[in-house]
Structure formats: structure tokens, C-alpha cells
Image (tube, rainbow, N blue to C red; front, side, top):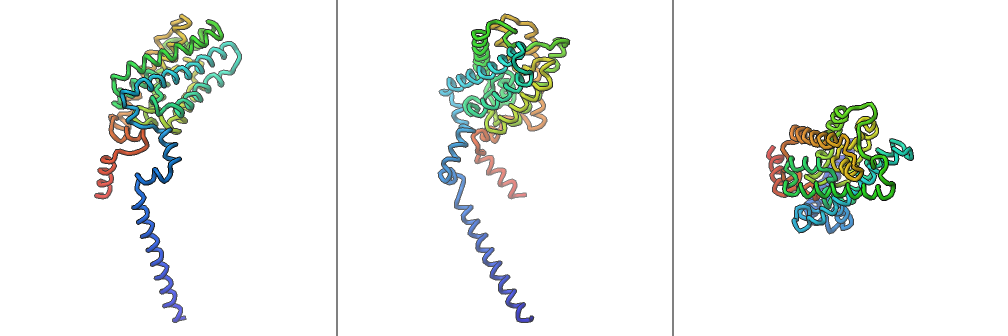
Length: 307
């Protein structure tokens, strides 16, 4: 019995030494494999991340503005085609209300995933305005984004008119039966404030990129439509309401769908400032490319180490 005690101690020491050596080797390997070396080690993963999150330099490059504007044109066209088209077909009794309001949410999800890294997938003048107010998007680019969003919405409604004719207001957003303009306005303010809050909370700087943003924003659009569509039509987007109004010639209550989203966006920006500060910092910008600012990360590391 007494002979077993030293033997056990030896085994314990040997095991401890082996564990210590293994830990030291793991640390050495972890130190050798830096962030720069992991990209080539996993080229497919690196490529997928680049496609999903894009490159912040490309997003800021003035020479690529035409590509970003085309992306906004295409994305807004697709969104309004589905949103207004769904409203038109529901008014004709051919699809359910649930289908009409869920379809735009699914389309937003798809748009963010396939082109969010190019233009940021704003698709909405209120969103571009909110990003600019947060200092994540330059003001000089806001007019171009808004104009191209309005053009994309108009083209979508011209297509709907070509296919269906000028019927059912081309899916225009209007206060529901029994509801006044003011009730619809209040609903649009609250719905847009929550939408833009979701966008500002999931976006990387001024870009809606990645699966989290796609699911969060698309899911909210569908959710808002499921319960609030009978009240205001759930536009939350001046461009979405502009296209049907212009092409159908029916500007009834259009002011509701301009004032409501703008006021809602202002409220969302105020909430974002209270929750996360003023915005426009280097870390939020770098997150759009899937990497942190090296100097900022270094300073944060020093602070943590000092604590």
C-alpha cells in the first residue's frame, strides 16, 4: 500500500507533464497560425465570407458607384415588384393576405444575401437617410440612392401595368377600410421605427450584409405585414408607395407613406444613439468586411490586458 503511493505520484507527475507539454505545443501552434495565415489555409471559407460581407474599400470606392446604384435599382425593382404585385393580386382575390405580406419579407431576405455586399441593400429612402444620420453613409451619396430607388420602384410598377393593366391601384399602399389617414400615419411611424431599428442593429455600418441581417430584416417585414397590413398596408418605404402612385396616377394618402417612414427613421436613429452611441466608428465600418480595425482591436486588447 505504501509502495503504491509513490507510484501514483509518479504517474500523476508524468500525466501533468504530458498535459503541460501538450498545452505548450497548442499555444505555440496557435501563435504561429495568425489571422493572415488562416485565409490561405481555408480558401473556400475565405471566398464565401468575401462574397457575403464584401469589401469596405469597394463600398467606398467612387469608381464603383455605378455598380452600387445598379444594385439598388435591381433590388428595389425586385422588392416593389413582389410587394405591389402581391397587393394587386390579393385585391383581385387570387392570393391570400398572408402570402401578399410574407412574399416581400422573403424577397428582402434574398436581396440582402445576394447583393447586400455591393450596395448595402438599402432599397428604401428612409434607410439611406437613417444610415447617413448615423454617420455610416456619406450624405453626398444619399440623393443618388434615393433617386435610383424611386426609379426602380417605378419600373416595377410599369411592368405590373404592362401585365395586368391599370387595376387595383397597382398594389398601392392605402389606409384599410374603416381606418383614417392619421391612424395609418401613426402605424407607419411605429412600424418604420422598428424596421429601421432592426436594420441599424444588424447592419455593418451602412451595409445590410450576412445571414443575420437577411433573416432579421426579412423576418420583421413579414411579421409587420401579418398583423398590421389591414391598417395601413405596411409600406414603411416611400419608394414602395411612390411607384404605384406615379404609374397608376392615384396619389390618395401618399403623404402618409412619406411622412410616416421619415419620422419613424428619425425615431430609430435616436433610439440607436441611445443604445449604441453616435455611430460612424471604425469598428462598425470594418465589421462590414468581416474584420476588426487592427489599431482599434489592438487598443482594446491592451485595455483588457491592463485590467
